[in-house]
Amino acid sequence: MKFRDAIQTDLPVIVDIYNSTVAGRMVTADTALVAVESKQEWFDEHSTNKHPLWMVEEDDGAVIGWVSFQAFYGRPAYDGTAEISIYLAPLQRGKGYGKQILQYCMDNVAALEINTLLGFIFAHNTPSLQLFTQLGFEEWGHLKNIATLDRIERSVKILGKRL
Image (cartoon, rainbow, N blue to C red; front, side, top):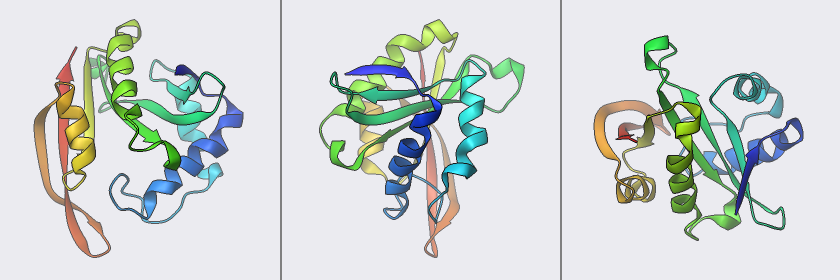
């Protein structure tokens, strides 16, 4: 498995992987598919700051997924904290890649001057909650019923880890 910075030609693949999670209502709060164009600004922000967007690939170049780091709260005092998001291609889920990716990120964010990682995870997304807690993340917040998906109120848990 290898990690590299995402480039412009990766954006359609990133969006395809992202869109593959929308219907399941477990990972994203988007309720409809997104267009590549709508993610361009988000993509550009990752190439201009210390919060990268990495592609994750097999050694032969086959895409496993992607991982992004987002600034937390957008104020300088929080520069050492980042939200992490991991998205796997549909055929790569359930193979243990999420754990390997999260561990790699934890091991390598010090170079980005990040010392705290946060995961914002739907409370009903048991697999993701288990993944993060297995690697030492703790529940730092519970936002009760703040999202509505298909007329069902959903809660979000904030899991955090100091590195």
